Image 1 (cartoon, rainbow, N blue to C red):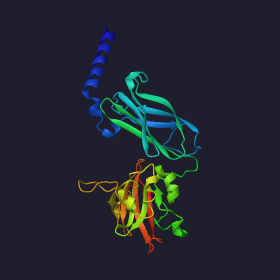
Image 2: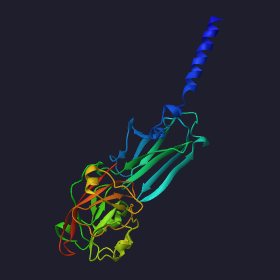
Image 3: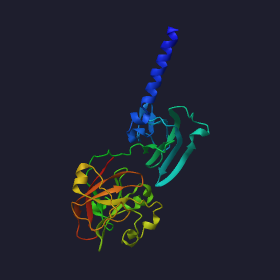
Length: 309
């Protein structure tokens, strides 16, 4: 009888513990409530693969965890962006067979093929409350340098569209944020999926940085003759930024009258700062350091670029 009373007392205490507060009362941190996605390679979490040659396969384990509220996961989605094009390679409802709804996490093996150029793969999961957790892996062939976030790159020299010879012209006018590379016109056409913007100096627009999709390029001498050859015309978005944004590694706040747009940024001056968002999902800041040349054949611009988280 004494043992029975003790068990009943313990049961009452346990019931009080479970009814005194809910998991919503215990945790009110929305960011922590989101599901968590981790990509592991050889037991270590990664966000970049750049040590394999094109064509090689890299096995990884994608782990999808419930958020802190432990709400069931409903869907898994995997999207890859290659050459500026987005492909959904998996879109699965988890109760369709390959996930036990009672488990707190799912691990799935996934083989990542390294392409000829940089690509990204986004792993995403959604729980029953509609919360979404994601992580993105950047994949590049061996030897490709992927600059770190919040680090100012060396001054990048972009030649004007008709500046095709000499020290400045040899640098080219097309720039890839993803691999920190300047392309000449001919190389830009064959690597269009990586090109984020181009520099030109127009009679009216003056010093200009333009996304490849901007219609102004169809009117620019030296570019208009070739722009039709670009199979991918990346729509990099720009927004005016301040020197404080650049120094503090922050994006400017969008307003109803000031938003990121995929449009040419014209009449740039030394000291001007721009924020950008690329098709591959990178965001960052540009600062104009120097504008050079007095003729179309000698025009060039020197900029500093950094990506930010």
